[in-house]
View 1 (cartoon, helix red, strand yellow):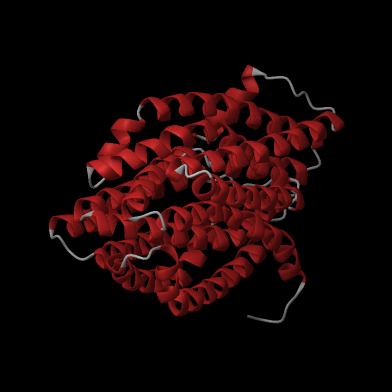
View 2 (spheres, rainbow, N blue to C red):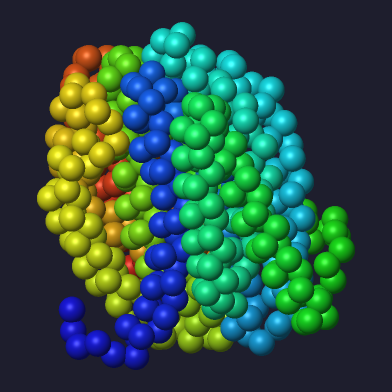
Length: 435
């Protein structure tokens, strides 16, 4: 990298607190994985099946965060404070409505979904128990997404950081107490996470509503604003569907390979999710700063920021690669005492390490285009990438290949995303100026 300058300071002012706040969310999953992993391979497999459903349901609604960040940042950058917070409140109401519907749907279908993604009846029983309880956290998770996205849009990274840190500590304490202190097993871990998520949701929701009232924005539900938030999020929803579909497909293939690969898939996915959230800190800077510079009509500033953030993406990806490669044997032992699962994990984690520099660039460019409101392109690009990835993943299952090859296929997925994003950012069609 070149000498540290004002662009770097602007990026780090957003990325540093965003990084800490972002990694606390996957830390909850990592904590659950470590705690449940020591209960047994069956329980760990159950968590793998249940968590892919839960994270998919919530992940499909990530547009609540990304859309809020981009829209609020653009209007905040243009000086339209009341309108910015009006959009933020609309996002909260949409999160509540969607959350209730999705929670009910998840609970109603938990048994069917658990059996579809499990490698045995014993694993399915554990998955169903975890998923049924965790469904109660879905509305809270969506409120956290919407509120966090809105606060990022006005460059308040401190509040989400504080809330996420407290929720994560509470999650670990509750899970240890409920799983081991009260002997509730996998259900105790789910209960602890539900409580922690609702604490975070109420806290963040109150902050956003108070600020909206101070900006003289309406906090009552308005159908038009809620519908608009939902409509604007459709392209990002499609984009996210393609990302989550790849994860569901990988989990289904791992389940076909057996209990050990499925358990290894849970740990590997948890590690990758943690790294993705960490690398996504620069992408969050991309969303917030791109929205602000485009809203202010600064095309050259947007281009300069993009180039600099790509450099940061490469750098952070290299660091993640080195750390993961060096720590892969320790991570395998940390998450499971099963030698067979450990043996499957280490080579897969080494493949993931090699991919990290590419992932760093992918996440940055994805964030920049989301900040620019280029959701339609991202949706079509996501469909194209899924079409490339699916044959690779299915071939692993059809050929009964080793678990490692499933993560080699993931490398093809990341490479395809990089191509679509890089080609787009080279042009100017995504750089729409003004509020």
